[in-house]
Amino acid sequence: MNRQLLSSFKNIFTALLLTYITSTQLVIAGNIRLPSLGGDSYSTIISPEDEILLGEAFMRSLRDQLTLIEDSTLNHYVKNLGQKLVGQSDDPTRDFEFFIVDDPTINAFAGPAGKIGIHSGLIDKAESEGELAAVLAHEISHITQRHLMRRVENQQGLPLSTIATVLATVVAASASPEAGQAIAATATGLSIQKQINFTRSNEQEADRIGMQILNDAGYSPKSMPSFFRKLQQANRNSGDSVPEYLRTHPLTISRIADAESRASQLTTPTNQEDKGVEFQLVKQLIKIHHFNNPDIALRYYHKLNKNRGDKYEYRYGYGVTLLESGDPQQALIQLQQLLKDTPDNPMLTISVAKTKLAIGDIDGALQSIKKTVRLYPAHIPLILAYTELLNRQKNYTEAVRLLEDGIKYHSNSPELQHQLAVIHARANHPVESHLAEAEYQFMRGETKNSLSQLDYADRALRESRGSELRSNKFILSSTIDALRVIYEEKEKLEDAATQN
Image 1 (cartoon, rainbow, N blue to C red):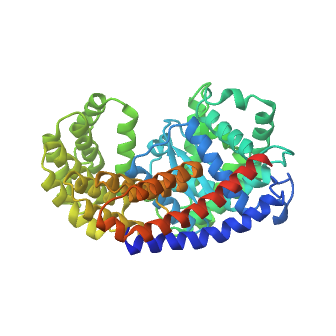
Image 2: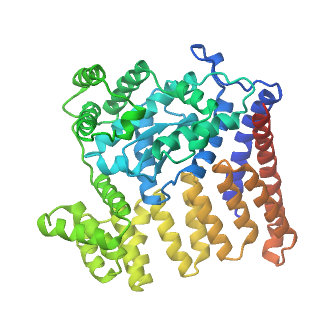
Image 3: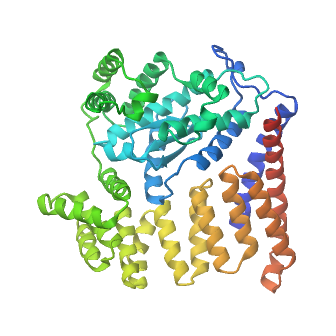
C-alpha cells in the first residue's frame, strides 16, 4: 500500500477515533434518547453522534426495503446538485447523503443524519434543474431545521435500531404500499409515523428557507411555487391516485400563496430558470431506465428525433438507446456528432467510450476518455469508467493510481473504494483489496462487514509471499490494526444503541 493511502487512513483514524471515543462515553452512560416532542432546546434533541448511528441504521434498513439506483453518473449529478445547495444553507459544513430511489412516482424525503432520497420519477417529471433543486432545497431545510428530530417522540425502552427500521419502513411504504407493510401497521409504526409527519409550520418554514437557498445558489426561487402548482394540477387530474409527494408534503392554497409571495420578494434578474444541459441528459437516462425495454425506448427516441431532431438531449437519448438495443455502430455515429457540439462533456464522453468498447475498440475508448479525465480529475463517473477500461487492459498500476488520486478529492466516496477493491483483486493484491472493501463497507455503515474484511486482510497478509509484499508488511499490518480500533469502537456504539 502506498504512503498516500496510508496517510489517508491515518487521517481518517485520528478524526474518527476522537469522535467515537466521545460518543462511546455517551452510550455507556445510557444517554441515547430520542427527542421529546415539543422540546426546543438543543439539549433535548438527539445528539449529533447518536443521529449518525440512527442515519446509518436507517440507510441499512432502507436498502433492504427499497431499490436504490446505483448508476454512478446519475448519483454524481444528484450529489453535486445537492452539495451546491447545501453550500448555501445555514449549515454548509454538515454531512449530507443524496441518493435516488428507483421509483417512477414523484416523491422525496429527508431522513436522519442528512440522508435525502428522491424518487427517479421526480427527476423525470421536473421540467428544469431549478424545479429539482427546489425539492432538494426544501428537504435540506427540513434537516438543517431539525424538523424530523424534533418530531420523533422519546420512545422509552425502544432501541435506536428499531426506531431506524420503522422510519425506513414508513418511507418505504410511501414508495410502495407493499413494502414493509407488516411493520408499518404495528402500533409502534403508526405511532412513529404520526410523529414524523411534518406540521404545516414545518412545511412552510422549509419552503421559505429552501427558497432562500435556491436564490443564493443562483436558481429562481419561483421554481418552488411553480412546481407546487404543477403538482396541484396533477392532483386535480389524477382522480383517486394522489401523487405520492402530496401524501407526504400536503399542499394548501395558503402554502402555495405564501411560497409565491416569498418568491416574488427574492427573485432577481440574475436568477432565471435554468434548464441545464446536464440536467436534460440526466432526464434522458432516467427515462430510458423507466422504459425497462430498450426496443420500446428506441422507438420512442426514433420518433422524437424524427419530429424534433434538433433537440440535443433527444439525440443523446437516441444514441444511448441504440447502444442498449445492440447497435453500437449507429450509436457511435449519433454520439460523436454530439461530441463535436460539446467537446469534453463528461456524460457524453463516457457514453462514447462505452460505445467504442461495445464495438471492440478498447484503445479508442481509452483515447476518448483520457483527455476528459485530465480536465475533470475529480469527476467520479469518469474515474470509474476510465479505471474499468484500464482494468480490461490489465493496466492495474495506472488504475490504482487514478483511484487513489480520486480518493484524495473524495475521501468518503464508497464508489471509489469499491472500485479500488475490485482492481486490487484483479491485480492479485488480496490484502489491499480487503482493506479497500473494508472502507467501502464502513462508509455504508456496515461495520460488522468491515471487521470481517479486516480479518480477511490480516489472514491474507500472514499467508503472503514475495519480497515486495514483505517490504510493505509493516505498513499494511499497522493499517489493519489502526482501522480495527476505529471499527471496533464503532461496533461498540452500535451494539450499545441496539440495547438501549
